[in-house]
Length: 224
Image 1 (cartoon, rainbow, N blue to C red):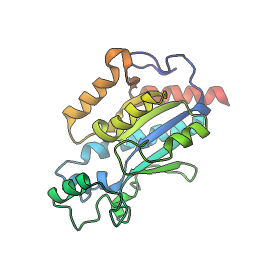
Image 2: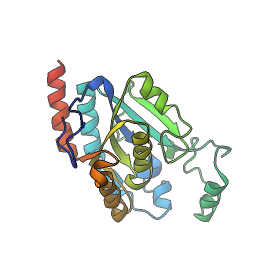
Image 3: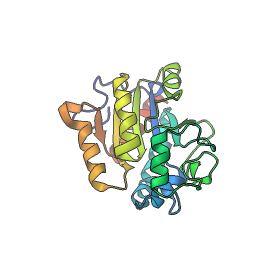
Image 4: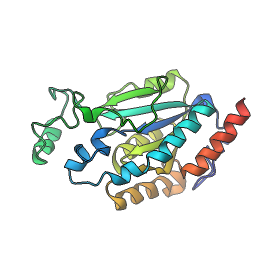
């Protein structure tokens, strides 16, 4: 069990390593670098970079406990054939035409070298805010009999929250790690975390990384 709000996770008291995965959402250079997409849009990437130590500690604890670690990457084809007209309009409006930001052919698409990615980790590439939309994420989770998800990454209010909402609708049990998620907008970050807990946990539960890591270490000891 993980001590969380508004209820301890998971609700049924059964946290099983082989049925649980740690999701690491979009910790790419385009969001973390001072020259990436996020910075070019006028946001400060430093809050996103600040979560990296906590995320890496969670990754290490998750692996030690036998959880799957799944990273996601947001980006489009180099020819932008998979980019919607609205996204192309937003790109042009932001002055990003002619750049390689958020393109899979660009260096910003890659996961930051500061993130602990191991050969056995899974990587899911996406074009939408949700990691479930037009991807094989759900098939991967179902095939591995994964039913419980721990959420980390960026941004709290967009890709993390959109993926979280869809996961809940697909009957996955979800826990968001509050200090292992970040946004360029602190108000939006705090609002997104608050929304997890409303209506007695409509989008699951919320806990900090220290609490989650302690529970995972206990779990790792129990399964040895």
